[in-house]
Amino acid sequence: MLAGCTVNQDLMFRTDGDFVFDEWSKAKDEAYTLAPNDRLQLQLYSNNGQRLMSMTAGSLEDGRANNLMQNQQRGLFSYRVEPDGTVDLPEVGSLRLQGLTLEEAEVAIEKAYESEYVDPYAMLQVVNNRVLVFPGEAGQATVITLQNQNTSVIEALAQAGGIRQRGRSKEVKLIRQQGDDNLIYSMDLSTVNGMNEARRIVQANDILYVESNPQVVREVLTDVSPVAQLVTTFTSLWFTYRVLSDD
Image 1 (cartoon, rainbow, N blue to C red):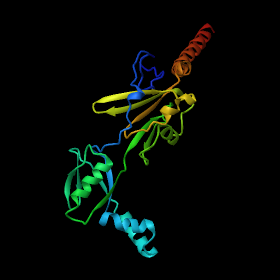
Image 2: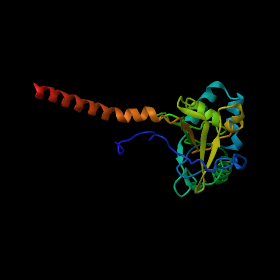
Image 3: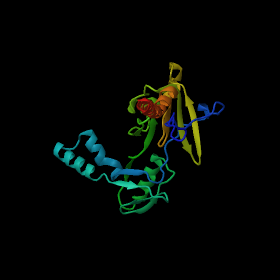
Image 4: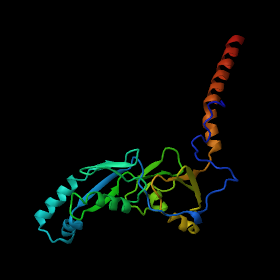
């Protein structure tokens, strides 16, 4: 019975009562920096993006603008940041982008293409940034792709369907990797006093974990029920045997 016990085995990232959480006052909403295995979409224009501005400003004819937009969409290839931190780009080859913000990477790409184009203008986007959300109930974890670089904690929870019935809104953890360390912040979202934490900006690869209410009695009964049925069956068989023996 003890070996097969499953009481609250779905709970994760537990902390002791005397665990010291990191302080929100020291948390920094730093810009995301590129890391290995990031997937990037690059749009590159010449003449400081003159053609892009012509399309967005509506100064091109409709047919020509539509053709340019279709060509642009067909040209949205995905490039991977390799384990060594470099990206293999057409015409210019390997370019090291690891550790750069999106703005810094765009500047680096523009400099790399200066020999190929006149006044290159780069637009870069990371398409696989994500946040893991555990909303407080087993089997309900969600991977949220960050479409917006300014996604807040409350937005990420909303995209995951909100805190589930078993979840404890007063005990929400945000786990963030910083170098080789894991920073763990605690949030109480059960009252409006937690709105400051709820509006914090999540970063790529953050983990939002909502503590679950323990269901000890229910899960103990679930574990004990098969044993109880087995005992009842053997008792019934033994009683039947005794009755037949007496006859």
